[in-house]
Length: 137
Length: 137
DNA sequence: ATGGCACACGTTATAGCGTTACGCAATCGG
DNA sequence: CCGATTGCGTAACGCTATAACGTGTGCCAT
Ligand SMILES: [Zn+2]
Ligand SMILES: [Zn+2]
Ligand SMILES: [Zn+2]
Ligand SMILES: [Zn+2]
Image 1: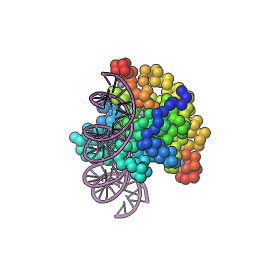
Image 2: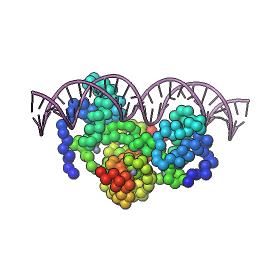
Image 3: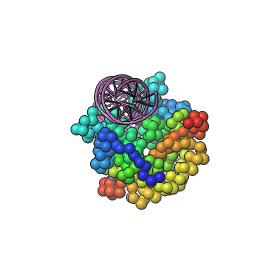
């Protein structure tokens, strides 16, 4: 599938996506809320609703292991492919990548067990190269 | 069947592990708390401390995508291997499995990027065979 | 036009998840 | 004995997410 077509983003969705784009790492929903106070945001639900739609469009990913959100590294998003994340617990940097072999193996398990997958989460938490060498601890 | 209580386990840890073992599916920390009221549990921290240790011992896994915990399917636990979970969002059943090919591929990415992994999360959320056929959606 | 519908939005309140901070008691190796 | 470690209990708090209700707007078939 090439770029899925998204409808025009609403004002709130645009604001949330911009906030995530500007950020250097993942943001929690409440951090997003704080950063959008000046744009009129008042309540968590405004953030969560926008995030929900952006995730549907494949423009934003939720990092389950840290309750945070990142903008997709591919500017037009991707709804169907499996994605993995390496999350540095020291500096917070996130690398998004995908691996066909992993996707295929998990697909095999799923077929063998007649499981109907809806969402797959792959997250490696640890220390990135910079932080691992620098801290040396 | 239940472990013949691990000698190193404290009273609270044993209680929490038994609660998870008896349960048919994953339990949230607060559900565990509720089920252990009669055993003297009063505060979330009692549960979280026990869960932390049990995770260290590899006897319990945390399911990041649903904020819940399950007893390891291998009665003596496993600290080092990578584990994947298939979680049915309808009936709540969880299948724990591991796949060497997946482990190897993620290991390759990690080595190539000099990332130092601490914990890897692989969770497939969807509908199990029973629920998928039964609901026929 | 007008009623019905779908959708985005705004607000309040509440549910659910997890940690910080403090103090007490038992244990173990000097 | 002493300090260090570990587990335990309690209270208070903070973070994460959703429920419930109401508003307004565009769109479409009647
Ligand atoms: Zn992406
Ligand atoms: Zn880092
Ligand atoms: Zn296990
Ligand atoms: Zn099921």
